[in-house]
Image 1 (cartoon, rainbow, N blue to C red):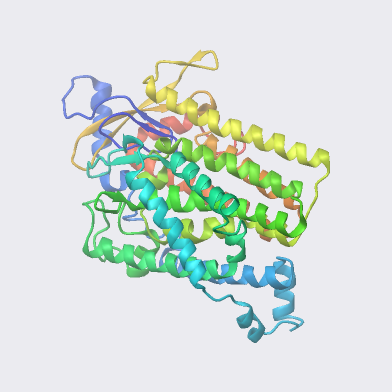
Image 2 (image 1 turned 90 degrees about the horizontal axis):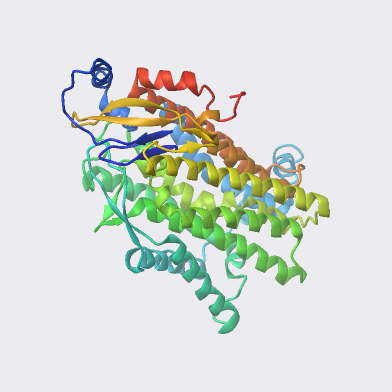
Length: 485
């Protein structure tokens, strides 16, 4: 989310707030125009709440369909990988057309939970909770919420990941306390365990938001209905004794489990084959770069849509507990069932494109951060930075101003970093070839999430900034792909 707020305001999209919010009257005609423009908009919608947007993701029926569909999809993928080399086509053909596979066999293929799987998940999740709460880190304040709350976070994600990796290495290779392949060995039982935990958390988060909200940044009870509110979430930043659940599940449980699963595929393939295919090695390298980047720049993550605007419900919580470790790592899962050894030129082409995409992703985000830090007074690509001054209103009636960056990467597209993200996603999947759909799930998911997110963000910014946003869009007309979209 290309948002930058340096004072008592929230931020959305390509936004850099360089002034304190104020109620001071001014005789300047332009300022009065902007202020009146801000006052004319609904602050609650302008700040990006789910309120009023119950048609997102297909409304109530869409939310129910996604929740049920995700669970079925996970089980269907398991059956496909167990019987037909992760081929959805062959599985569907055998089940519905040739009748080679019947429902009784499908039921028998579904894995069972195990005690070791439960211990693995809670051991990992408990250790990361301990690290987030007690491991020394930088204290950083998040962006002000719609109701003015400014929360403090303990930023130590990279340290927690490094400590986890060291302890797992010692336990596996020095003291023989666990098998290097322990995660992959429990892949089936862990699927059942994570689904149970994921759905249980969704219900508990709904009940917490309904009866024990952390603060006033919550959807009022009964605003939509139980199914949509469970899907979208009730609370913006649910906390228990000042422990932030959203950052914990996204950055710690989700991102670090992604890295652990990737490394477990590598260990499992080496254990089975005595070597590691260059395709699996390539996928692991590129994804670890992305994961470590997020953990290193965890403070930056506080300024994204995930933290600032999206509530913690099925959409985020189930996504990071289940979908990240199982679906985002589908390339490694596929390559374990279908070993691929790339030609040297294929390997280097994908690696170089992936690294260039990462460079664009990181430098575009850094460009935005520097613009914020210097309050717009900088040069970008040898020219003074261009920006649009936009006004808005907070929920308590205060007026604020933001600078919308319109230079460099952000002059090419309002979400240029999304384009870099999509190119990276393509490079994660390309080593798997183009004959199967399953390993491309991550790319398809990112296309859907980022394009719909850009639309939602555009709506938020339009509500927040009004005519100032329209002016900005005329200067930067493209959302994601320069000169195309």
